[in-house]
Length: 395
Image 1 (tube, rainbow, N blue to C red):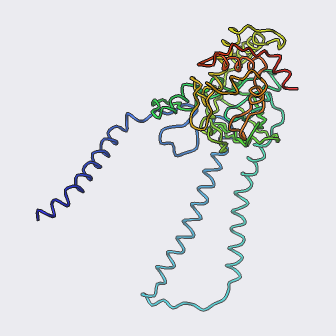
Image 2 (cartoon, rainbow, N blue to C red; image 1 turned 90 degrees about the vertical axis):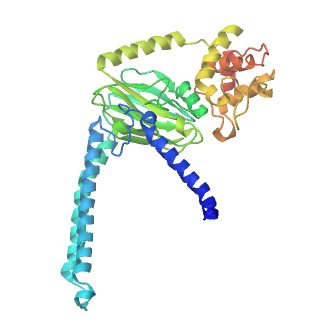
Image 3 (cartoon, helix red, strand yellow; image 1 turned 30 degrees about the horizontal axis):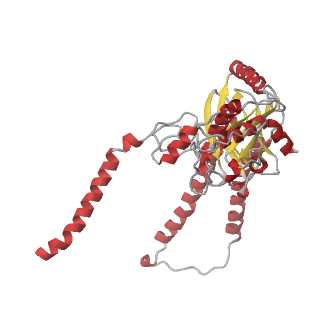
């Protein structure tokens, strides 16, 4: 008996420890939970997202209608099957019939499914056709997928000429890298520059990509459109209420796929006009003369902002890199007096997109960030790269 107890005791201790851990986890569940994010995901969400466009509302109606029809078919078919099994079971003396076919039954099981399919197809076709009708848009915006961010260019309508990159907020990437993210409602959904559109206006989104296939998806709008390199696709939405709405890249596009959020800010007409005016002023202030000769200190200050917004997520703020990401601190390419190779890396990328192309940045921004890397951390080269060098390299 003593020997048995000695054998059982360690197992019982493990079970007790497991039970204690489970109780601790359940007790702390409230502390781990986050709140519903308006316009984004909800805690324990099992249904489609609350719609803010007519298309999204019709998609939900179709989903529920199809679900009811399928449930009705399921109940009818399995009900007849189980009734027949129970009613005509052998224990009650049922004798199997010997027959070949019934014209009436065959007509019925051909006609009835055909009618059901037509009843399902007609409203579905109507919605699909409406989803593809991008004509008469009030605003046209091109969304370009990059590894791993979105570029937005306002092509037509109020705001025409505005363009910017939308990147995951650096603080959220730092939380993810730490392995201990804070419990916040918009984790990995905050961006530095959200897409801004007016309420009640038809917005056409033209999608394409710079490197691999991405997908622009905002569940609240009922929108999901692939962005394919070398192809132009389009979709549209008309938001019926103001607010912030969130989505993500819905196509597996590489190791940073989880860090490509979409944030759409829907404003009133007056607020949108004010935003457009403000962006135009910013663009005018940022317009750089590529022939301008910059001082070293000016380029370093400008380059630091560009680096933190675009490069620090992979190469780290200290330039040390991580895993397969090569360090910039002490890099032979960065330290070299020949600027051409580093310029080429930024304009064309490397390793099949592992190092993406940054040709979407302006000539001054590329010159500034290269100058910053050549004069930061232990890289005290004193070298200056002027925008004119980038202009020449693009030719």
